Image (cartoon, rainbow, N blue to C red):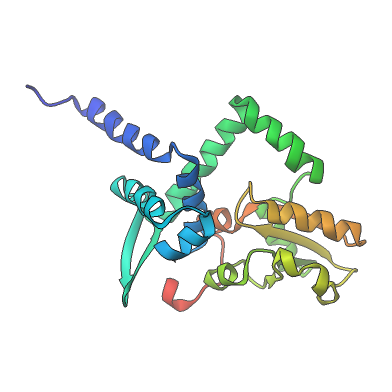
Length: 225
């Protein structure tokens, strides 16, 4: 039997990647790994899956080189393989879904747009505001995710702590909040809560992974670079 033509061989390999992306839990795993390296145990706790299911989904992602592993002592840590490309791929998938899938549009309208119908701050605009010292950048992800990497000069107040730590924010300075990505609810909830308290708050158009993938400066531990 003759070998497949080059184009067909490429399409078959791309189809394997598409199949690896074809599960909601695997997309969720990629979102968590876009924040930084994680163990299977950590990912199990974050996704609510069993250890066995988490391992199985990670192996599917690993076979298509969407994730990779490294050993740290007794632990095996997973991370995105080619983070920029994977983050861009998932973001593109979301854009196609928003354009073509009625259920995606319904959720965007019923949940996200009801909480914040204003246009989000673009990355380029936020870079300019940071340079001019006109904004407080607020990271509302959990503290351990913030420690793995964040926007330059960002203040970390996890969403669950926001109400009790409002005194750390100036009511005279605009706040731009961000979290894990464009579908992460933390930033939407934070902006709604801040506006209700009289703060001038907006959200970043996406999240930390997209900011990093675009080549903009981030602050992260030396061990992750």
